[in-house]
Length: 258
Ligand SMILES: Nc1ncnc2c1ncn2[C@@H]1O[C@H](COP(=O)(O)OP(=O)(O)OP(=O)(O)O)[C@@H](O)[C@H]1O
Image 1: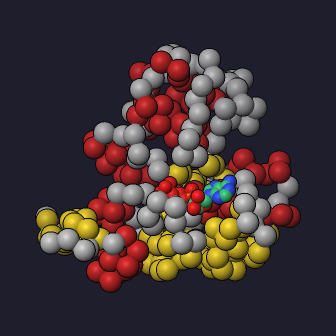
Image 2: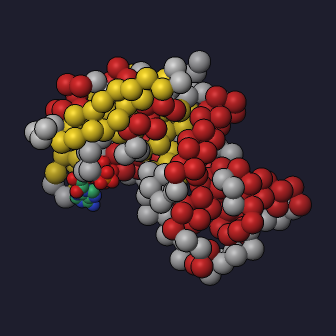
Image 3: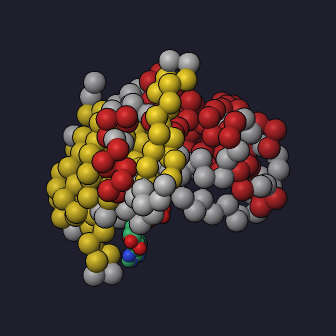
């Protein structure tokens, strides 16, 4: 396995407050990583720092071993695709044109580029939306189109901020399975911020648990999301169930209530 993304002692301050503190993490290619933690833990800022959108005041981020500050901008689109939480699709564009924003020229120039965009829409079960204006799509449909744009980029790393937030249960399951295939079969590093702990534990190869801007633990999901951490970080009691040979983690109740 090769090292795709590395955080070394990363610290980020915004508005005079420490948002990320002393984060060390190494992300291997070919893995689906779930970035978890309660509201305000720092997941979105972690992703923005990883994507090069925000520059940390302390420490360093490396892409494929190279300090991000030294990677020429022209190489960024082939290295990293970032799908933000507020994927503003307010432009008067068809879904297909939105997906095309992920292409090198930001628009379709050849038949093969058109195929690439249609294939990306197909992946997220949105081929039938290609000709529809994005402004007329539902929240979940827009979210799938935004993910298709990131897929069309065909970058070595894919970062997505709560890509399941607007999806119905079937599309949420299919999307995580798809992201896992992208990691395992295409050898990308895929990092997704998630609140769905049951799904994170089922599908991710690793979870990274953030709390108040610190990385509390990273590793196998069911080991990281143990009783003590869930209580301390989320104030949550969870249950574990065996179903069809899998251990399911179920958020059950606030820790301070029966
Ligand atoms: N521009 C900013 N200036 C100051 N503080 C900010 C700014 N943007 C975000 N923050 C703060 O940074 C912290 C981390 O925010 P972030 O959006 O990364 O959390 P998150 O883990 O993604 O939360 P959620 O699950 O609610 O999406 C929060 O306390 C937030 O208020």
